[in-house]
Amino acid sequence: MNPFDDSHAQAVIDNAILSDQETLPRTDLEALQLHRLREVVARIQNVPFYRDAFRQSGVTPDQIKSLDDIRRLPFTTKANLREHYPLGFLAVPRDQVVRYHGSTGTTGRPTFVAYTRNDLNVWTELCSRFLVAGGLRPEHTAQVSFGYGMFTGAFGLHQGLENVGAAVVPASAGNTPRQLLLMQDLQVQVLICTPSYACNLAEVANAGDIDMDRFPLRFAHLGGEPWTEDMRRHIERDLRIFAFNNYGLSEIIGPGVSGECAYRVGMHFQEDHFLIECLDSNSLEPVPEGEPGELVITCLSKEAMPLLRYRTRDIATVTSAPCPCGRTTHRMSRVIGRSDDMLIIKGVNVFPSQVEEALLRVEGTAPHYLIEVDRPHIMDEVIVHVEIRPEDFSSEMRQMQRLRDRIDREIQSVTGIRMEVKLVEPQTLERFGGKAKRVIDRRREKGLI
Amino acid sequence: MKIHQLSVFLENKPGQLVGPCRKLAEAGISITTLSLADTEQFGILRLIVKDWEKAKQVLKDAGFVVNVTEMVAIEVPDRPGGLAEVLDIAEQGGINIEYMYAFTDKLGDKGVLVFRFDDPDKAIHVLGAANFNIIERVDLFNRLGIIS
Image 1 (cartoon, chains in turn yellow, blue):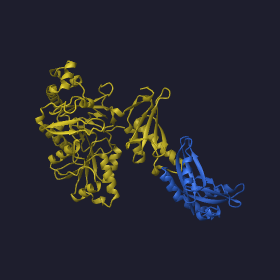
Image 2 (cartoon, one colour):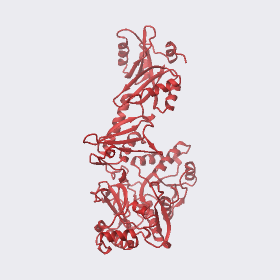
Image 3 (cartoon, rainbow over the protein chains, first blue to last red):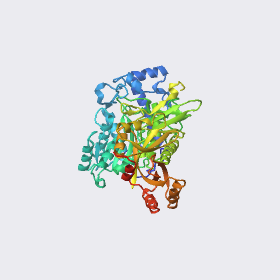
Image 4 (tube, one colour):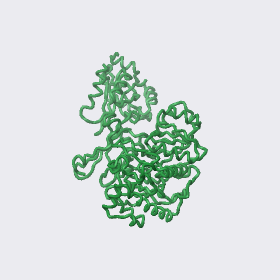
C-alpha cells in the first residue's frame, strides 16, 4: 500500500500557507539548510559529546561543504541523551534557557530538553504552520486535550494556536464528559489531542445524549502517537470532523517537525529548521525514495539543545514528489513502526502495526493478537494468534472460516507476506501490565537471528 | 416455536471440551443435546439446555465466547426415509440448512432433529404447512422429561 495514496486526497478546506519559508524554491531551501547546518555544527562544539565525536572522526566544521556532508557527522541516540543526563547536551549557558520539557521516562530514565527564547519562538511558528495548513483560522476556538506538563504536546500546540489568533481552551487530559461539555458550551471547532483520546471522545460522545448534528467540532489535529488510516476514518465519521496528522518528538523540538496540509498526502517536513534523512536502521545507508526507513533528524536552528543526526527509531517513507498545496518541502508517511519493533520475515520488513492495520480493516477495531515467528526448518513461518470476540463469533463454521480467510487476505495485502491466522479463545494471549505483548520471535530464542 | 442453542468457541486442542462442560455441571445445568463442529484449528460446541439464559451467563462469566442461535426442532418418523421427507420439503421451499443434529432421546416412535435454517421463520411456515410437527420449547423439554 502506498501511504501517500490517501482516499481523502482532496482539498477538504481552503489551502492556506502561513510562511514563505514553506514554498521556497528547493535550491534556496537547500542553500539555507547548508548555511544553518554549518552554523549549528560550529555551535555544538561546546557540547562535550559532540566535541569528542568530531575529534575522534577527524572531521572539522569547515569541512561541511554540501548537505551530503551530513553523512560525515556523528549520530545521536536516546541512549546518548541518557548517558549525559540531565543536561549534558546543553549548548548554551543555563541562564539562556527559558523552558524545560522532558520525556516521561516510561522506558528508563527520563530525558530533558531545553529551549531558549528563540527556540520557543521557532517552535510556536512551526506549530502555527501546520495548524493553519490543517484549517485553523483566527476566529476558531480550539480545545487542547493533551496533558499539560513535561510532555511537549500541550504547550507546543497551545503556543501555535494563540499565535494564529485562535481562542484556546486548555482543558488538559481526562474527564471526558467535562471535555464534551466544554466543547458544546464554548462552541469549540478544533480539537487537539492524541488519536486514541479522540477515539475515546468519539465513543463517549456517541454513547451519551449529545445531538451530533449540532456538535460544534469541525477539525482535529492529532499526534503524539502512531495511528492508522482506519482510525482516522472512525474518528472522522464518529465525531463528524476532518482529522489531521502531525509529527514531532521532544528531543527534536516537540510537535512541529512535520504536519499534513489540506490535501493530506503525507506530512510536510519543516525543512528550513530540520535536515531529514531516511536510513536503513542496520546499514545506516539511505533507503531508496519511497522505501520505509528510519527517520534521522538534524536540528538546524535550535540553540539550547541542538542534536545532530538524531536516530528517532521511527520508521516511515519519505517522498520528494510535488504536493498540490504548493509547498516545496518533502513529505513523510505516517509512522509505520518503530525500528525496535521491526521484524524481518523471509527478507521482508514487517511491523506489528501492519498486522494491526489488517485486523482493523476486517473487524473495525483490532482484537488482541500475537505474532509468533519461527524458523522450524529453512523458511520463516508466522502464526498470527487472534483472540475471537463475541461480536465476531458465529455458530456457523462457514462464517468463521470466512472471517479467518478475510484476516488472512488483509494481512497478505498489507504486509506482502503470507501468515497463518489462528483464532484463539479470548483472554488467552499474555498481557503485561495492561499492555499486550505483540511479538514472540522464536528465531531469537533459538539464536537464529 | 424456536429453540435457543448456545454456541461456544473452542480452540482445537486436547482438553478444551472439558472447560465449558465442567462449568455447566458446577452450575447444575444438564446438557440436553450437543454437537461439535471442528476444523484442524478451532471448533464450535453447540449446546441445547433447558435454562439457556443461565447457561449463557455461566459460560460468559467463565470467559468463553458464547452466542445464541435460534433453532427449529422437528419430529421425524423413526423409519427409513423419515429424514429425507423433511429435507425434500425444505428443498422445495427454498430453505437452506446450515447444520442439524439429533436429540439423543426419542419421543415414542419419533425422533427429534434440531435444525439451523438460514430462514427459521420461513422454515416453520413451510414445514408446518406440510404437516410436520414443529415442537414448542416447553413441550420439547416436558416430553423429554426434563424439569428444571
